[in-house]
Length: 549
Ligand code: NAD
View 1 (cartoon, rainbow, N blue to C red):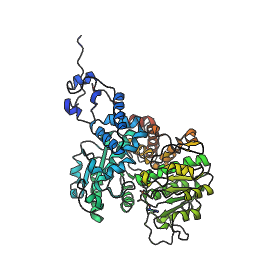
View 2: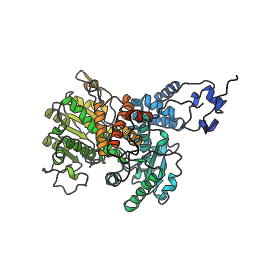
View 3: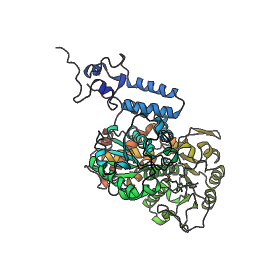
View 4: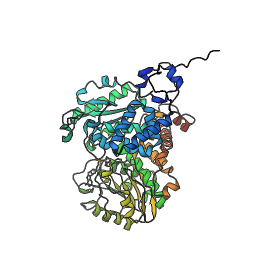
């Protein structure tokens, strides 16, 4: 009998349209049978590469480039033409790629977004679109399950980047796919463009956004409300992650939407969970109890109060009264120690304003408080000075030092400084990546206390269980799960987090814990499956090419 020619799957685009569809394109890896069935003959060079060979080709192209921003541009171009290959490169080399597609390089990419712009990705909703947002969302070609949205006002530690903040939702959603396997088709990055107060951008001929100062107040709130309502209608059950909003909007919007929709703010809640996980790991080394810790934060914004809230919640879960737990957290902002007598405190700082004399700066607060842990989240580089670190080492056998500010230029100290100035005793984590450090004959492998350990798994767990809400309990479960995946060998080399190369396993475990929380608390939109881990794994996108014939 004659052999049946290969058949393409129904509805599959063919020929040039297929090569130009980044969600389906395989480039030179289309097999002979696919080339035959899909009208690709003559449109590709003769040799059929494996995806592994394509990955090697991309790596050598990237490694030839010296400038991280050039690598970012090259990866973006790959993302635009072949998503599976892009994600395979990221997944197989996550240590090398995450700093390029996310912090620290993405910060520079946002600042230069207009100059490096090639193709739009995601949706831009501007102040001029008021009254028409639902119509705009109708132009999106896929069914979104997750939206990451920013208004660009507080991008990393870099301030107002206007519409150019779009680099952040794009990068973050790439991590949702790479780290947790949320299908790229389900991911929708959105930049809300309400103008910018960044004079440099307003004067930049390449700036991509509205040339006006930011709108605020009721008009701003109306636009966000319109977007949230339209998104829920267009994509029922969609998870909305708020990202890089300035303080004055971030806390308000979270409070407004967290009990009404499936929404969270990663800067506040994701950061909190990754920091709590780091603390739990550090306590495995010191043997101390969480309720015995005293935390001094440099910074009193989204990250600081988010972490303080979750740590307090974890202490309460261990039986400590809420008031006593809050007394364990002290904040220093740009005006000094946050104390009750200050009349200038925003609402999010007030729970941590304790009875104490005013103290003007961080080193003085450190001497007065004698904390067991210092957590830097003020986005002011170099503030964990030699004096600060030596003081921590005097007061603690194993001082906990988290320099979480991003990008690297804003880090409170480097890994080398943290280890060197504490005689190798610091339990250290950083927001930006640092190379291993050799101090006093020992090699330390610091790991990033980066939200990317947390948010992909939380998002996947919420999506898989069709959760109607994202709760603090889910973030606490995520933190415990992450800390539980740190091996003794990690701790022995100073790592408070698992290797990033295990991120898919980590995300699957966190997603399982989050989904279990949704099922247990009546928040899930489907019955609990018999095997929750298997259900999670079955929904994870695999960037290896499927067969089209
Ligand atoms: P934010 O703007 O909400 O808060 C910054 C806080 O720092 C404010 O309270 C401000 O008063 C305070 N501050 C500013 N200058 C100060 C000074 N000189 N001394 C003391 N306090 C000062 O920002 P955020 O969202 O809290 O983020 C802060 C930093 O943490 C950023 O660099 C961000 O990139 C980083 N961060 C890192 C991670 C991570 O994964 N490692 C997660 C979230 C945030």
